[in-house]
Structures are given as structure tokens and as C-alpha cells.
Length: 184
Image (cartoon, rainbow, N blue to C red; front, side, top):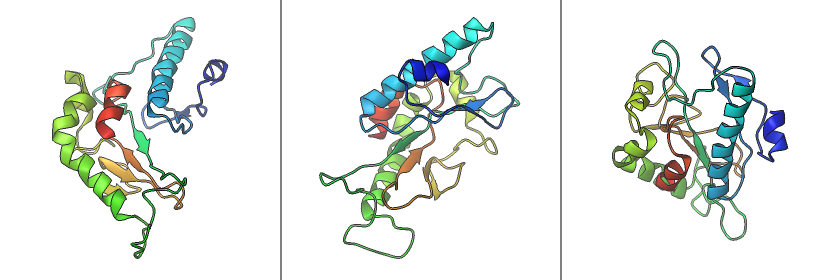
């Protein structure tokens, strides 16, 4: 965490994840998609350098160990209008909870529809597909859900201002720029 801070990479301290030696790193929100990808690439470089310094190797494979959970590259995406209002929250078409606008439902539907054509970007290596299996905390079909951690597109619980979707298909070995472009 100190190294990422020294490099001006906005990230929270890593937290232990499901498998041994696996860490989850949440980067801070930035409103520039290319800058977010720059941060992802730089963060991998910082992690690699820190690991080497201590005699370790950092691994960004999607599925480095058969018996353990894989590593994903999850993209959280929200949109705001010219007035700074969340485009995915209710507009004029208010409905019962959850407070999704039709625009959010269409965005998620579009990502799911394009998933077969986009999977080569999300899973660029043969190893990438080993991560996508049932009961592995990775999505295995184009589906969505609210606060569900095994779907392809997750809608995290949030207030109207922070309403977003999380694209969960890409592996840690994917090119963040290509993943972001496909999701956008």
C-alpha cells in the first residue's frame, strides 16, 4: 500500500481474499476510464517490484492453481449526466425498489448480449477459461443479480448516487484497456 501511495496510485490497502496468498485490491474511483486503466497497469508493476524485492513472484494469472479460486479484473461502472446526476438511478420512470432506471437495465442487458463476442478480450489466454467454472466465485454464464458475487454483471447495494454495475467476467490476465473498451 505504501508503494502505491508513493506512486500516486489511488488504492485501498489490500485485503486477504478467498484463497491462500490471494489479495483483493480496491482502487479509488476515478472518472476517467483511461486513467483507471493506467492505474491498474501501474499497480501491477508496483506489486511486481515489491514482490521481487522480497524474493517473491506476483502472479496475475486468471487461475494459477487448479484447487484455488482464480483472480478477476472487475470493472465498476457508473454514468452521470451533464448535471452530475447518476444516469442509472431513477429518472422520471420511478418504480418500486430497487431504484434502477431503465437505462441501467438496458446497459446490463447490452453487456450480457455482447458477452459471447467479448469473451476473447476478457479471457485472452487458455488459462483464463480455467477460472470460469461453477462454484468458483466466477461467472459461468451471461447473467446478472443484485449483490450476488457469482454473476457476470452484479449490481452492488448502494444509494442512488453510487448506483453502478460491476462487470465480473474478465480475469486478472486481461488487458484492462480492452476490457474497459468492451464494457463501455
